[in-house]
Amino acid sequence: MDPRDTAPDSWEQEDDVEATVDGQLESAFTTLNVNAKPFVPNVNAAEFVPAFAVKAHSENFSSAVPVENGDAEMTTEEPWDQKEAEPNEEEPGGGDRGPGESASTEELAPEMMMEEEEEILVPKVPPVQPDAPKKEHINVVFIGHVDAGKSTIGGQIMYLTGMVDKRTLEKYEREAKEKNRETWYLSWALDTNQEERDKGKTVEVGRAYFETDKKHFTILDAPGHKSFVPNMIGGASQADLAVLVISARKGEFETGFEKGGQTREHAMLAKTAGVKHLIVLVNKMDDPTVNWSLERYEECKEKLVPFLKKVGFNPKKDIHFMPCSGLTGANLKEPTEMCPWYTGLPFIPHLDSLPNFNRSSDGPVRLPIVDKYKDMGTVILGKLESGSISKAQQLVMMPNRHVVEVLSLLSDDVETDDAGPGENLKLRLKGIEEEEILPGFILCNAENLCHSGRTFDAQIVIIEHKSIICPGYNAVLHIHTCIEEVQITALICLVDKKTGEKSKTRPRFVKQDQVCIARLRTAGTICLETFKEFPQMGRFTLRDEGKTIAIGKVLKLVAERD
Image (cartoon, rainbow, N blue to C red; front, side):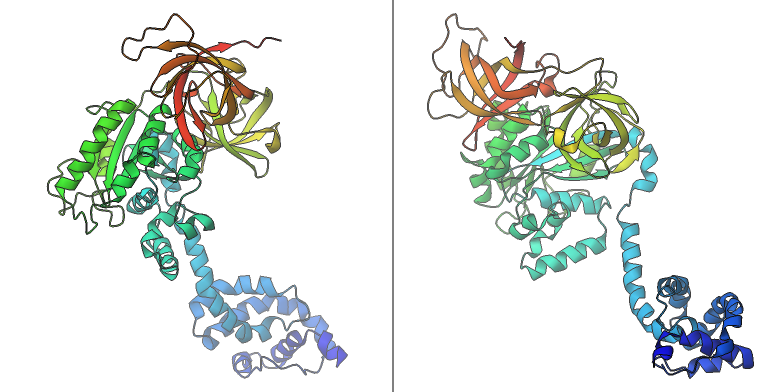
């Protein structure tokens, strides 16, 4: 039994046939028994091995054709198949394997094909990508109350612009149906982790990108739930343009807009984060309680405009309202017949028609870090606020003053050699460990470092606070992508809202709706600039107990007293 097990039986069998009757090889294969073990070893087989090695490939193919019905798949898979099985010496080799293995290859073939297809389908855009940097990069953040439909609209836009293929969506739809959540499947394009999908709530800021004829957009899908507002602030701080999604469904709009609803808070935070232009999408217009009614649309609009005006948006220039349906995709790319009263452009064409943002690429390099991880080195994510970065450039990580080198640059997952302001980047860095970086650190060029410190004077507007705020009050400071504890150490003066005049005496406290200038001191060193010099890094929000208490701008940096 032992010699039979160890001998490579099928070689010898094939060699025998080959030596004696060359023409009957095909018939020999058809009658071959796959499970046959007891072949008698042939002592002279050794001298035929070189000949077999040469001929086996051609003969395997010729024999496989008549035997198998799936010949097309076989011929493509065969070389792979042989490579796979040759190292296992104890297995029946070459000729014996042809028909035996074929079944498994045939079963594998569709799966393999699917895997290959999927891999081809996902990166749909990169072939067109080399000219992408010429298109203007715009970062769009989707904000609004929980369940207004932000992720669904994001998913629908990705489908309409061809960034998610139909088959992937059908897969999501099947999975969502199994969980009795069939209306959620579009949001799964952006809500990728299991927890977000199970609960139907976005937690982290989802990222994706799509392109129109003139522009390249990055979607930042912010969470609507009030527990995750800090994540939303991080997302809004990277955005150039905000899309406020509100639900027109009876009751839903009201809860989102009442005190404590996220529609108000998000609009205000977006303005504080430096978003200049706001598009208000009135979603769920296809809902039975709304049914594309103009009255409901106008009602939502009338309630929102005064509030947005109060936050600081100019209704004539900065705000644009439009009705849509995220689930059906109506009025996102194509106008819809359901809504004859809306004459403006649909959402995607409207984004395309917006005027360009003026960004100077010759400014100092400023890249606030949003996230970092390890992947063959240290990788950081962030939006380049000003300046331009190229491969192999030497930069400085503030506030720790680590000198780092850029090994590679990815702009929206496509590798480039250089990047300009406004782009969302992934940088692989050399010279720093991932543990030494925190979100809120800033990459600068060595000639022009950003300011860092702990104490600064700022103008603050108290938005919502039940009691009074005195010196010694602690809150959480959100400035660009940085989150740090802060204490108001002194109130310097009150500012009159209408005239802008400053009070002569120092106030002992400030309360809701007042504007004051105060001195703040953070727990650790942070990077910041004055609002006048660099607006993106000079605006901030103060939060406490899960609520946004104040918004402000940095007026002056105070040097540390030793």
